[in-house]
Image 1 (spheres, one colour):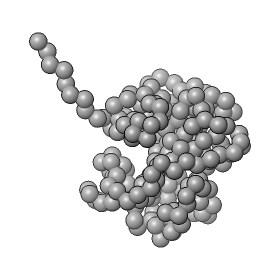
Image 2 (tube, one colour):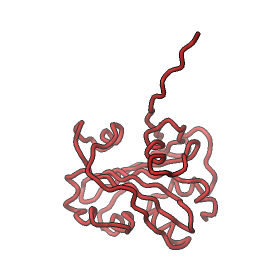
Image 3 (cartoon, one colour):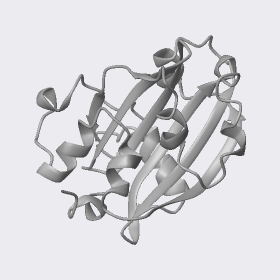
Image 4 (cartoon, helix red, strand yellow):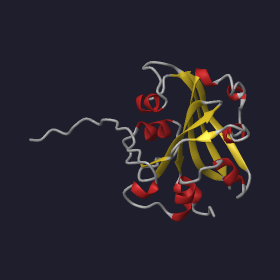
Length: 187
């Protein structure tokens, strides 16, 4: 009799761009996944964007997030989790990890409240986005568990992207999960 393996979380399979990910996202999702500018500004062209803050706190990032930011193991960072609501439905879950060394240039971050982080970041003259990484979520990633923990729908089979952004020569990590029902009308 074969024993079933216990459920084990698996980090998302991040790939360098949409072209190398198995399966293809819908065209509207693909346009959002490859947006190099402010995603908030792109969504605001469709209508008002509301930010619902799920959590803001100092905590240790997930291991793959720490590696992406080259943080020492166990180092705490500022975590911000939000849902960007455009056209009345949850559109995007965003998780931002900001190392303490970056809070100088982004001192207003802990007081952003329901204002979009993208507005603050892309108002800086020296903001630069690193390479975009894309993942098709399988349902076993910690990212999916975090969403479920906030009472959000499971994005298993859906798409996510992440990239580092540099401000004043220092990096933060932004991960975004796209809810398919919220981006079908994106142009």
